[in-house]
View 1 (cartoon, helix red, strand yellow):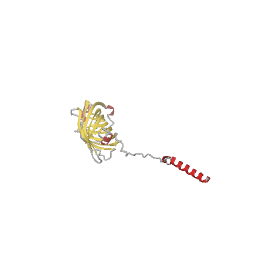
View 2: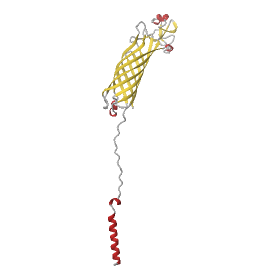
View 3: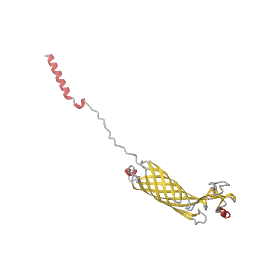
View 4: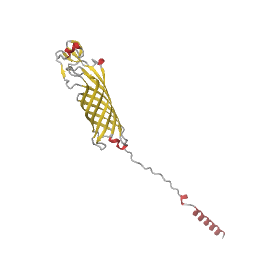
Length: 268
């Protein structure tokens, strides 16, 4: 009887213990949060830098553009919606009547046997401008050509350098500004050729002015980070003083020309 009572008591305690334990107390599950990964798009384009060569109807230019992309929002920045840029340009202006001639003397006193008959000055200019490029059509579809309208304006620093010639009748190079040598300067029978470029550098005169250009810009790049474009447009420059380039021709303080430019660079 005693053993029966003990067994009955033990079974009762065991059942009571099992009934008092909750399921959550026996098994605890650890839940690991799953991060939601969102696909990352390409970084928005915000800047660009490029360099180019411009062939003008009255000369040539080399230039550099440093720009910032101005978009309505990040999504449209890859369309290069608007670009505001600073432009630094170096240009040489020529008279349409310039013609290179080869002397029969071949440069006996130095320099070269070739020269431009009637040319009395070289004219160069350093130009600093602010420009705006506005998208008309194109990007961001891959492989398409974007078309922009470009306007730029700024200051110009003109540099007028005398054009020297070597002549048979004078051991030193001469320039047209000297009244005593003007007859020889235009006499093809005594001209040997153009003097060295360094001749006249110390006589450069500064002629300040301003400029404005307007053009259509075509970007052919298939890569969103490249600039590969062509510009076609017109340019106007005006200076504080008239610029004499050729003898016996009226000097004017302004230039008006058409141009085509080739440009390459990078965006980031």
